Length: 121
Image (cartoon, rainbow, N blue to C red; front, side, top):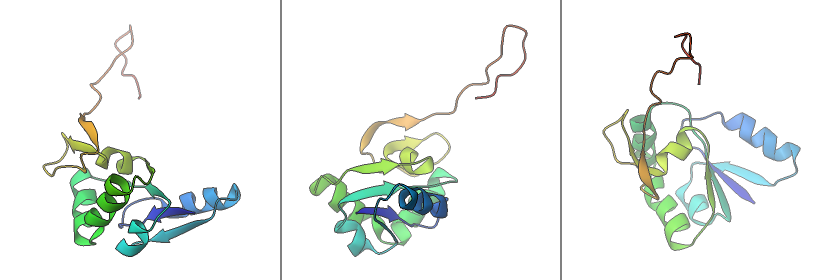
């Protein structure tokens, strides 16, 4: 069973549908008790780093995530902003991240090709 953490940001429907399509049982939850009891976790997210961290705090999910991942060793996959939240912080925000992965989220510099045209990353 895969537990998808609903903290208010993310394309949750697409994750639920993808797991359903490949036959993986899952639950979508914002209940900290479900997160603590999880066998596997997906932390999705779309948006601003500080907003994501604030919502995790406001919904009581920080301690639940730390209990599941750090103390119980539950595997976690972060998607988009969810992956960024696993790091120590982001240059786009002021709040600390979960800190499970050493490092910071940094913006890609503006890059150009040999003709000076902007590259899309």
